[in-house]
Image (cartoon, rainbow, N blue to C red):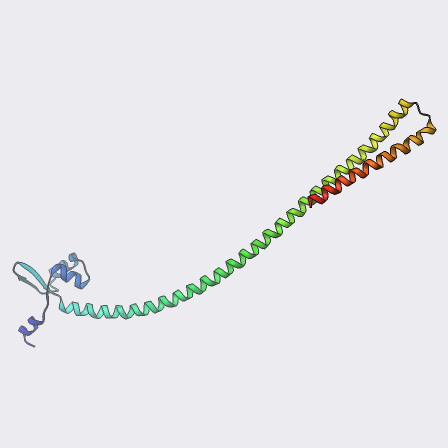
Length: 187
């Protein structure tokens, strides 16, 4: 090829176009021009640069990067599949943990309900016991009061005690029915 034919094949570009074609900044291209890396020609007052040789190198690099891009896409596809599998596994783990937590919460609620029922039962039984003890004291005081008021002799105290005992048994039966009703409603 003669020099005139090689000049005919050359593609002359402005500084900005050459920088874009080469993928470098205008400033970097200016430094390379100062080093004499590219031939420069002035046409109608414009500085034109022949960057055909480097452009073909750039084309090879672009083809290489495209091949690497395909490899990268394949690797990204594999990575995406792995991440999706990992996400599915993690989601399954989280769902299992969530189910265990819900079961534990239900069990805890049931346990606290049982504790509350036990506390209510103990409170009711304790109140019943206090009431029973107080009723015994009350009855003894009442017997002494009635004996003193009526001036009953010792033999008659037995009769009075029997009447008061019957009254106490009736009161206790009423109290028991009340506690049973409360216990039945508490559960």
